Image (cartoon, rainbow, N blue to C red; front, side, top):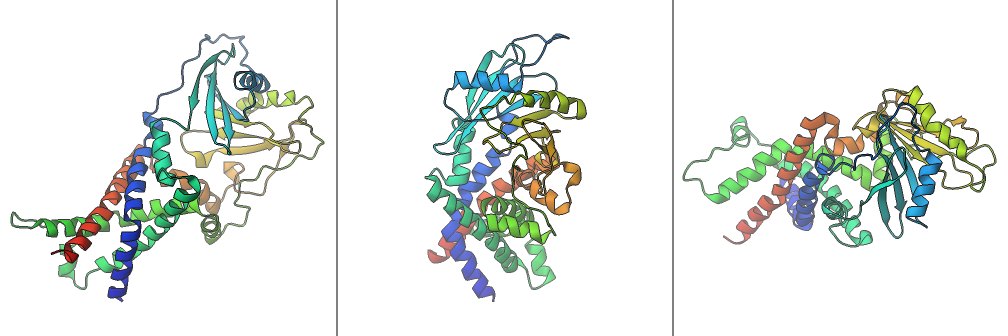
Amino acid sequence: MRKIFLKLHRVIGLMTGVVVLIVSITGCMWVFKNEVENSPPNPLSTYQVNAEVIKATEAKSIAEVINPGRSIHGVLYQQDYDIIEVVYYESEPKFYQSLYLDPYSGEMLGQKDHLSGFFAFVLDGHLNLWLPDDIGSWIVKFSVLFFLLMLISGIILWWPKSKKARKQRLSFKWKKSTRWRRKNYDLHNVLGFYICSLAFVIAFTGSVMSFNWFYYITYKAWGGDKNPAFVIPTVTSTNSMSKDTKQIDFLIPSLKKKHPLAKNFELHYPHSDSSSVYVEIGYGNLSYSNDYKFFDPETLEEIGVNGIYGTYEDTDIADLVIRANYDIHIGAIGGLFGKILAFIISLLSASLPVTGFLMWYGRRNK
């Protein structure tokens, strides 16, 4: 059995080693994206007691004039009357930008292209290996899935037959006479053992985001009985996008009063005649605790949903596992310490295919 697992470990390692190396390095770079990126520009206006923040429909009208013909995904309001961010998004061809507006005058403060720059380059490598999406994404998805099998087979191969052998595989016992091949072997085995469990969590959460079937099975395995997909409910009233939909202007002020502890409110405009408007209410840096509320754009009647993306207080353990998947993947679930840990685990994971390849090459070429 050990020979079978060793063969499996080597073959999968040689097939996916380069991919795991790239995905791990780009992953540890992505962890601190929010901390490294520049913050949006400051508002031009000075807040006054009687000043009114521009409304959602006004922000949309301004955004349509500045970038005509572009699909507007939503508008982000901060709780403390900070800058307003209008988000454009189109899937094909890809267009993903933010427009920053002064909250009182509506004057444009700047724009940001989320598909360009250093972190866009990093993300493209992490998801697609800088290849076309329909090629690179599948290579990455299956490589990460195989990496899970490698971690399992690696632990089986690592597991010693005696306590004496176990002690030798838990620490580095190098001397001046220790050759580099022995050091490389220890780096692969000792480091691999210590990071295995957390590397498995990172790869597992990555697979949850990669495969719908993996996502569904994970949710059901935790006892979930709701619709795990993100579904925007349809409205009950007869709504037309050509009608006056300025009723949604009352949503943000109303929600700010009802949720005084919230940090931001992201309103998403109806994308069809029968679509509801939904607001994502954020309470901090962790996305899993956000509230998702859906409303009829004409009557502002709240629409209930039988899915995992509703209010945070209605979630159960299965819902939280899926909703917190991204926060777990990048270590944000553990705050700054969690991100540092995810950075280290991802960086050390990048060393495994290198040391593993050197072991394989050294045995073939004495």
